[in-house]
Amino acid sequence: MAAAEKAQRYEAFVSDVLQRDLRRVQEQRDAVLEQQAQVLQLRSALARLQDAPAPLHTQVDLGCNFFVSAEVPDPRRVFVALGFGFFAELTLPEALRHLERRNSLLQRLSDSLTRDGAKIRAHIRLVLEVTPPPYLATPLSPASPAPNSAPPSRACGSCRGCRSPPS
Image (cartoon, rainbow, N blue to C red; front, side, top):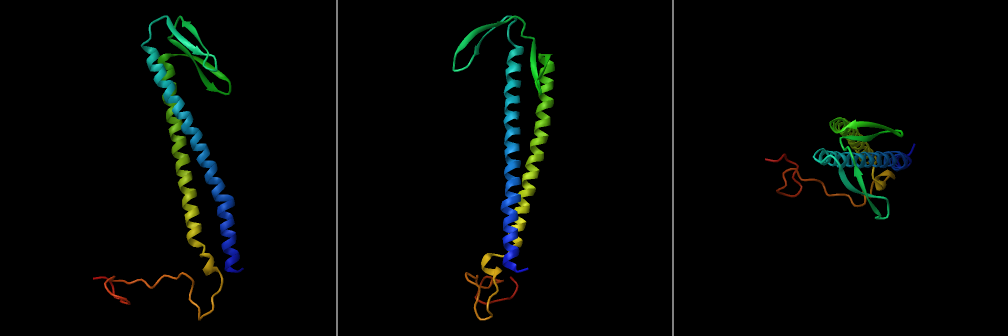
């Protein structure tokens, strides 16, 4: 198999598989971070609700900035969405504990997705480092140097052409 063909296969693998996986992981991580922000916002609202007087007077947004006045006779119990359409009636301390557990779960999930993204980026970098540049993938004639070839590196950096180890 020719080197140019291998390089094309590696580039196709990077663009078709690894880039797609990286995008998917980043989207999942963004969704988890959004949920985590909602949990933190709800936790601060519940903390403020603990200090509220017994008959709570508030305004509720019905949509399109249309507000109506509402009165909550007992703000010590709230309904918390558990997921899949299920709700639980919890006291404020129970709801705060539930939100702490949910926040720690979301944090672990976010950390896992961050690690997965880092692994995928490392795989992309590895594949791109292993594949030869396109100008080296084609065989060269012995007399012609590689285009854009860099000059030989100087070990000591003080003179031209010196191959001695740095002092």
